[in-house]
Length: 212
Figure (cartoon, rainbow, N blue to C red):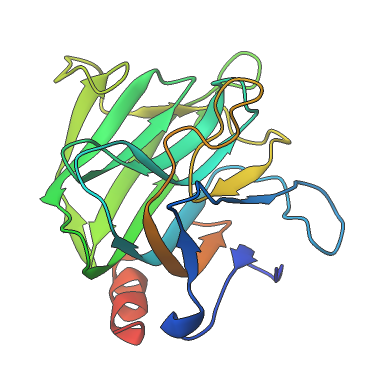
């Protein structure tokens, strides 16, 4: 774990050393705090980008999630059952889904950015701008309600519950108590970086090209 200016978390190495998840429902969980193996509490703005290769299709697969293992998610970056990128927040109660389908056994560079939020009552952050990327290209986004039951006629602005102290899970998303690997990822993740800012379109392209 590396924490430096502008980056919450940075996982690097050759693809031969990529994080491999499944078939035994493996996952990596990073505590939030100040210790040597902890990550700083994630708030907005935030950007997440990494390489991913799926080994299964047509099912929910969590990739990078911040939550409390009780179905309460500050954010959830996942693959949907129709093999597209999905982003969800519990506060917003909506899925933001990409339109490009990912095929298994192919490496993709994927990313999401969330920024330009402002505060409402309590910890709620609203009016956020969200972008999804596949291989450096900005992806069109479709909005769905609840558990991807859309499309939904809801505002495009994202609402978040960022700035919590929940652990970050890589390779799945935490479910109810006793089910720490609900909807696991079957595949590989490499070169994961979580930033404390919105990286630009040009930076996302550079990161994609740098990981080819």
